[in-house]
Image (cartoon, rainbow, N blue to C red; front, side):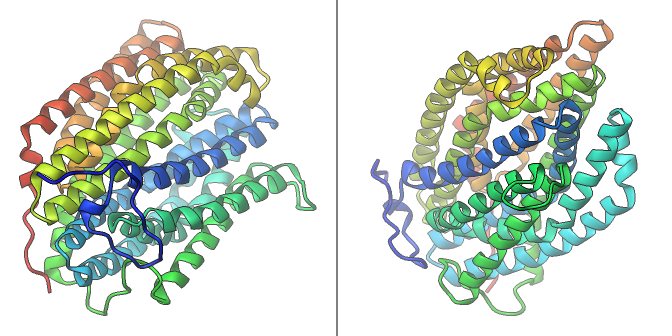
Length: 461
């Protein structure tokens, strides 16, 4: 069994590819956590900036973001396949295959992003109309989301190349780029939403433009580093989208895509039920989610570490190392997210008041934060163990577990609660059953070790 050091990995130069035994959970996680915190800080600034425009604006942006992430579901699915295949190739000392997988993934994601943008442009009003927002909120949400979706190809470039870097064990380069990207995003948010720094006052349209412009900058930077051969993953060569390679990529990605679709469908259904309680309930839900974003970002960071290490250890034919690294990632995630959840719940009223000056919205947000805050250890299992099994190429079991917890438990319970005429706080309480069941099922799957044997790689060279 390989030993896993607790010391952070040292990746001193761009382009260095470490062996999995030189990596550690914390060494991979902390740059991703910091990266996610920077991204989350942008979300907090966005809610604060938009919150000054009132509950309608917060509801409009929250709805637009939810729709946008539905359209990102397919791209996120391809990221699961990219992570598994790149990590396996690097762990098996095959950087050429890692480069070809990355190139193929980029081509596929650019195609998907253009198609999804076209679909939304044609049906924006109908899609957002299902949430029953008031007329002004709906109009604002359509404007916001159309602009945001237009930048989908730019998001795709950033997602693919950053994901490939992390799967290769270099989580620092995406962090360095993210520092500048998020500083630019925050500057543009404050400037364009509220008319500061000599920039025009564009309201929520400015929030969408800020995100799009900053990620355009991100993509230009990472493309420059890629083409000048300063990344751990090479550019690859034409002809990367071979039948066998695409079959492997799709075979891993399609269950992840179905999981993403089911997740987003379930979240939209849950969001729709919350929206039945009015604009204030929607605003409270959005603010509560952003208050807990600090905890979520920690979980996502450990998920990246777990998926990278399991993939690389299995690529190096070390299943014990894969199991141990995933277990360590889960332990760290539960401890950190559980602690953060309680801390954020204790200060939830002050944090919610910071975003919006509306007593009813604040009160509802506080209840939401307390409910989801105490469930952070179970959400931690979803992040860490879910990330670990996906990194090994097992994307089907997370699909089934998401279907059970979210679609078959949370959404039906929420609808029953609504029909019983109970307040929206009881809708929020259905999160407890969802995350508890998902956590237990993930533990069972992880301990079985069957997730290590799902992915069978063929020679694609």
